[in-house]
Length: 139
Image 1: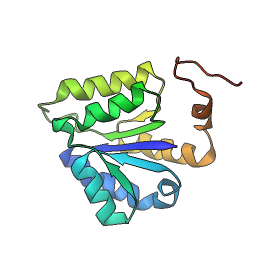
Image 2: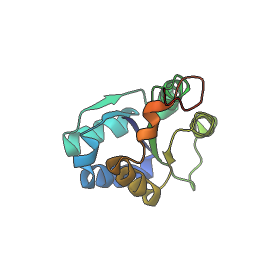
Image 3: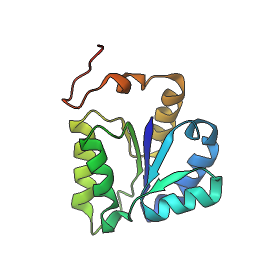
């Protein structure tokens, strides 16, 4: 599965803790992250992560583009709901695209843990049957 990992500045340490705790699960999947978050995950865990641009410089939109092309399976976006973000429209668009294309999305640590455990247990395997037209095709 392709997993996007995004964290606002005040949530980056929490993302590192999450990736460290769930390294065994994450290393079984293809990981993508926005700029600094990806660098910090790689440095702290040794996980291989494809890095996009920083969120405010278009990284959120790059991940959104993958979602719209059915090229992303899971998004973990530890966002800071109390901080004003200059790129808030990009954040909102990413969340909207996750809903439009039925991409499992976690925006806080509790949901992220449930999603990662579900990923490990096979609860997200239905994504393998999700086609570009937006429906499940069991062939």
